[in-house]
Image 1 (cartoon, rainbow, N blue to C red):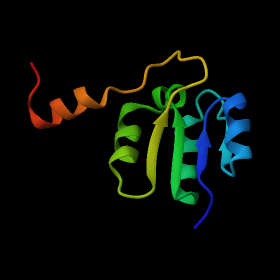
Image 2: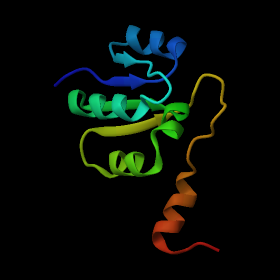
Image 3: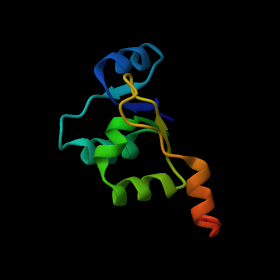
Image 4: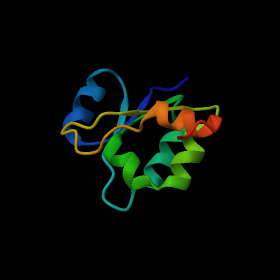
Length: 98
C-alpha cells in the first residue's frame, strides 16, 4: 500500500508531508484532476475543505461514496470553508428533513 495523500494549502501540506503523506497543492481549476490522481495512487486521501468546495458536487459525491480509497475532508488552515454537516447529510439521506 502506498502513502496517504493530502490535497490542500501549502502550510498544512508541509505538516502532512512530515507525517509521511504525499501532498499536492492544486492550482485554481486543477482541484478535480488532483483528486482523481490522488484517488488512483493512495489508499487514503485527505482533502482540505477549500479544495473540496472547488472540486464540484458531482465529483466530490462520487469520491465520497466510493468504497476505496477512503476520502476524508479536513478543516482548512484558515477555516474559510466550513466542513460538511454530517448530521444534516444523514437526515437528508434518511428522509428526516424538517
